[in-house]
Image (cartoon, rainbow, N blue to C red; front, side, top):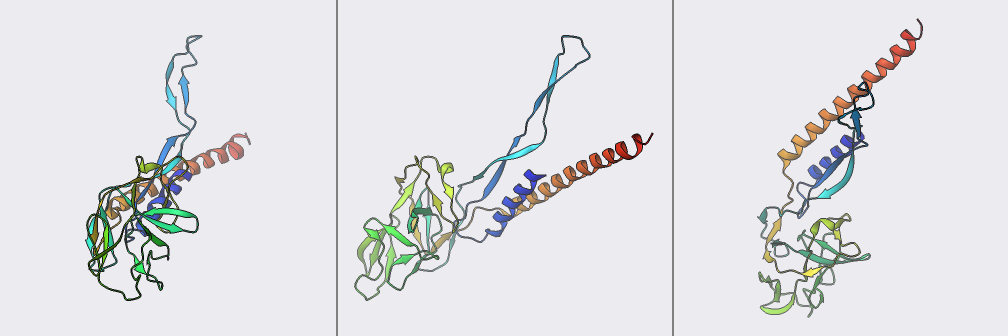
Length: 240
């Protein structure tokens, strides 16, 4: 029941972020809990093994599926989507973090920042969209180069990872690379005026939610049955 409750929480979080740009769905990996071998004990000293019996399940880990979401046009100059493997790099108080959410905006200082105010990093440091104090036309090429009034200013610093499954979610749609996981330069295509939608499939998640609730209900009925048997054993069998 605890495993199914946690799996339902994971599914609910996926559904809550179905409209979050660049969100990557999670899924709970269940594992057999304390299975034991079963033997026939009435066959003398031989006691052949007839199989194993589990004692339930538990959540081994919550993993993330890093498949790409659908690219959706927005027409916003400061929206960007990546086609191919790779992540934007952003500067946070805790260090460099990585994201696929390219819904950026311009700060009061003229810098390109995330919706939470974290500065987006370029090859020449944080990306400044107004270095002269006179904001101009911003265009970004597919190879990540940034142009201000047709003059190259900077380029996105994009990273990839040999094993994306080792990245850890940290909130605000950001990923952290744990110790021992090295970021490598990546070259996905950058599409200006687009965002990458989440990779959550609503129908699939709803089916998973219903299946989880049914499994939880089935297990709860087993507990109720055991409780009823214990009640009879204590109050009826013992009274005789």
